[in-house]
Length: 168
Image (cartoon, rainbow, N blue to C red):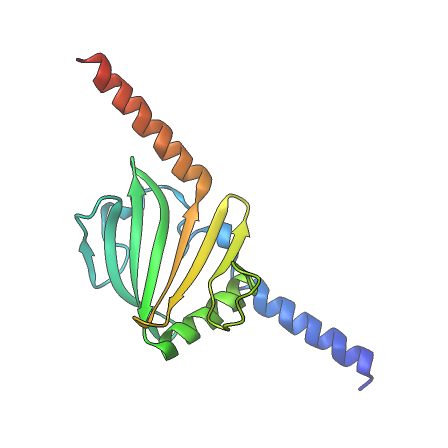
């Protein structure tokens, strides 16, 4: 096989592998950011309602073979994003590899950071993902958030607050 054919084949395989992985702006597990109606019921097995402000459900699940905790964030009835956490270097490393396959290598948050597990940032339209690794606690986490949906939730909150002020 000619080298140019081999390179073309490799390029097609890489693109095909990335194509089915999905884009960041598509949401999480088939649910686009915005309408939170699907979160009236637990989105997965092993979910608990979470009284913490801004978190509708926290679910114990897995991404590939990595056990993770997924917190679904809702403000003003809008699904604004998720926080995904895992514990331990091996799990965090595997999760980061999965994220990089799905969303690309990401941009390091700091040019001086040479750590392969270092903080990263992904952007796709109005959606961003921020990866953070804490080598002291062993926690790896990514926050996926739709900035435009978050800003809309803030406008709704301000509107509701100003209505309350008028009631004084």
